[in-house]
Length: 86
Image (cartoon, rainbow, N blue to C red):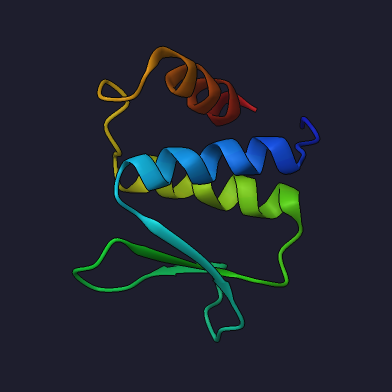
């Protein structure tokens, strides 16, 4: 498994922002590490997660919600594909 850093996390946050999502890091009673606020593009991630876990959580969300890679610029698509395979 590749070790990820703050720059990678910032890039993913940027991708979600371009898709209209807001990401918040909060304390919460959610076991999976994140929750999606119903009918809103708000992602709440457990604030106690380390950078690596935050990155993996965001990748999990991209996969689960089938966020369209086609609409992303080439650089963003490459980042998501690379992270999805790690």
